[in-house]
Image (tube, rainbow over all chains, first blue to last red; front, side, top):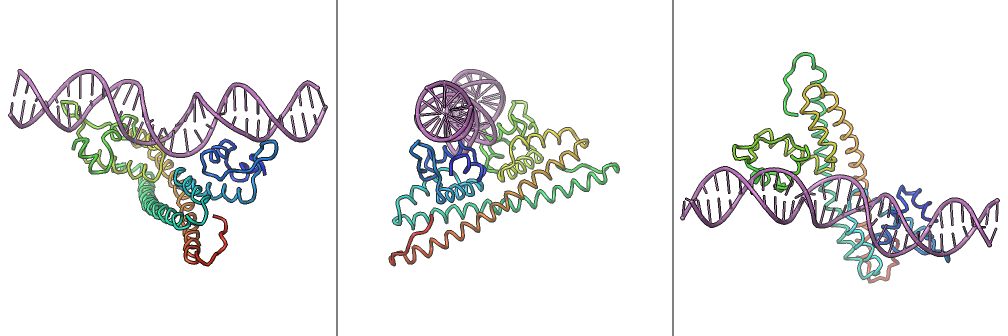
Length: 128
Length: 128
DNA sequence: GATTGACTTGGAGTTAGCTCCAGGTGCCAT
DNA sequence: ATGGCACCTGGAGCTAACTCCAAGTCAATC
C-alpha cells in the first residue's frame, strides 16, 4: 500500500503520515527500490492505532515514547503497560469532565428552549 | 474581586484571564478608577462557564461568538441555542469516541497484564 | 526519450491558544 | 514623598501539531 492509499483509508493526509513517521510516531515504513513508502498490514494497524489515540487527545510526545518502547522489544512490556495505564487514567478523567459538561449543556439548552418558547411573554432573561 | 483572586479561584492565570477578555471570550470586566479589573459575581460565572467549556475543547472562536451573541440581547436567543446544540452534538461525538477508545485501552492493558504475567514462559509477542 | 504525475526529502510556514515581557501607573506602607 | 508591589496595556514569543513548499527522483505512458 502506498501513502495515498493509506491516507485515504484512514482519513489522514500524506503530509501527516510522513510527519508521523518522521517524528517517530509510526515505526519506519519500508520503501520500494525507488524509495516510495510501501505500507504493510502491520504498518496500517499502527496508523489506525495512532489515529485513534490522537483522536482522543493522547499527546504526540507520549505516543512517540510508546512506539520507541515497542521497538526496544519485550524488555519494555512493563513500561509500556504503565504508560497505557497512565493515559487511560487521564482519558477517564477527561471523559467524566465531558460527561458532566454535556449534561450541563443539555440543561442550558433546555432553558433556552423554554425562553424561546415563552419569548413573547416578556420572560426575564437569566444569566446566559 | 481582582484578577489574582479570580485566577486563583478558577485555576486560570492572570494572563489567560486578560487574554480571554481581550479576544472577547469574556464580556468586558469593569475597572476601578485606577484602571484595575474588578470582577462581579456575574463576571465570575462567565469565567467559570468559559473555563468549563474550554476544558472540554469548545473552540475559543465559538465561545467568542456565543459571548458576542449574548451581548446583543434577546434577539439572539434562538441563534445562541442553535450554537449550543451544535456544540453539544460535537461534544457527544467526541465523548463516544473517547468511550470506545477507553474500552480499547482497557482491552490492550489487559493483554499487557497477561503478557507481563506470563513473561518468563517465552510467550509470543503479538502486535503492540 | 521526453513528458507527466505521484512520490521523495528537508525545511519553512501556519494555527490555536496561550504565555511572557517591557514599560508604565496607582496605591499603600514606611 | 518614596519605595515596593500588584496591576495595567500592547505586542512579541512560544508550543503542539500539523501543513505547505521547493527541488528532486522514479515509473509509466505517449
